[in-house]
Image 1: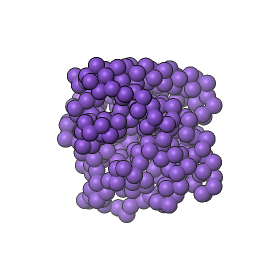
Image 2 (image 1 turned 90 degrees about the vertical axis):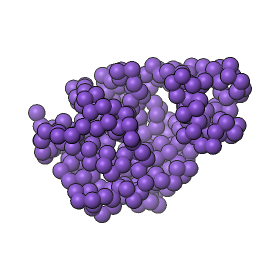
Image 3 (image 1 turned 180 degrees about the vertical axis):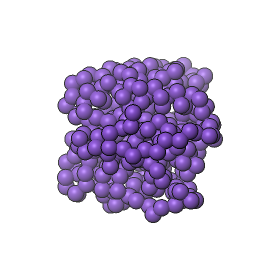
Length: 321
């Protein structure tokens, strides 16, 4: 069945992807060849983070920076929390930007961690808030356990410093990574993850997150629109990615990120083909975390590839607004 309000061409996929070669997209890579070489549009950036989770800017500073970058519609989608939305909404009213209330929910699927965006959510929804509180409680335990495991490996004070760096409610692996860079254990956050915070490394603690159907249920209960975040980033075979997208849609998912700060040009084109094949709306977002990653800047995104049905042009979007 076609999504209401969408004009989504259907065609069989004739290629697969294995996302083992995914790389962060530099700005210039997002304005590629035929079918993807349209003028850059800065209007919608529907995936960003603030200090409320693992970003480095306060929500107000994030909104102000987005407006200066030419963004008209910004979604704040912090990990497993709604805490930054009130401040962001006040800032958006001050600068004349439309804020989309959102969240990025951590999900365990097929023993992997994936992320689902909830856009246009009602932040007062008790079902969503209760679900996120459960994830936050697990995050609290995981952060303490990461600190204990690092201490066992001879690295003391990790949890305490990560807690200071977080400032907000959420203590994430990114905060531990920043601590380890401070300690001189690695040259960059990316290096830290490879040597300390992934499977079989000293500070690794596996995640036990929400189920896919469960997470989408919270989003739908809050009147929101579920979006599969940066699908090319999960290093899935073509068959496993098709299975993920199919289950996501069966659980009530309506869109997938096609253009992302962590998708290359070719990956965006591939994700566009998947969105058309599965009759899902297409979304885009930088996944911006702060100015420390200058290759990802607010609003600096290509338009959706030809043939995509933009989520923000749909009746579902208008109904949820």
